[in-house]
Length: 222
Image (cartoon, rainbow, N blue to C red; front, side):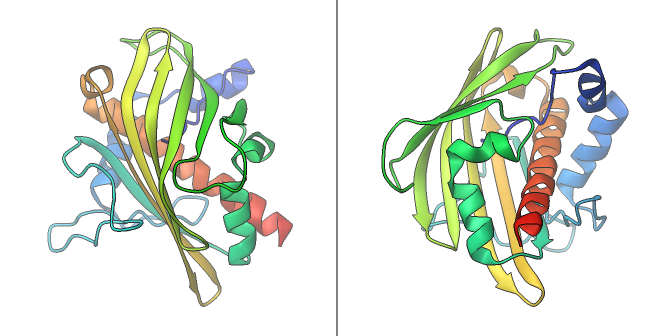
């Protein structure tokens, strides 16, 4: 599950990440397929009228294709694959390079692997239907292939806001000029499915921001 990329540590950050209806519509359109790039250089890869890209998978499994809330995007990161992989899988250090992640704690020991769990938190502001709260997300690694892909899933629980389950897949492919990082996620649950466009907008904003932060951190290390 991705973070919604919404900060409440200062008024400026809160204002920055509040998504108006127009932005929600724009992001939802992106989620359905455009060729535009964002400021991080990410290139959304979604279903078009003529062809649908192959679903992202890890160990033969992907997101819940029947879920109404889903988003997919990608970015070229100009850094070694090992650097990108280590940043992504060293989950307890996410707060050092992802501002929206306030905390992250491993619930087991040893290298991250299938069955590993971690619990992390991110604050979200109030919306028209839900109060401001801090989401507590418990993620379980379902599939993992070193330097290639990772897939985790789990619920997010907050005061007055629950995401029953999110499934998140990441693929990493070395290409000319760097590493192509692709990611796809879905959310499910009655509360978020009550307003699919807004939920999709928040999910999309979170994934785009995550890729932007990963790109910045990896390229700075490189």
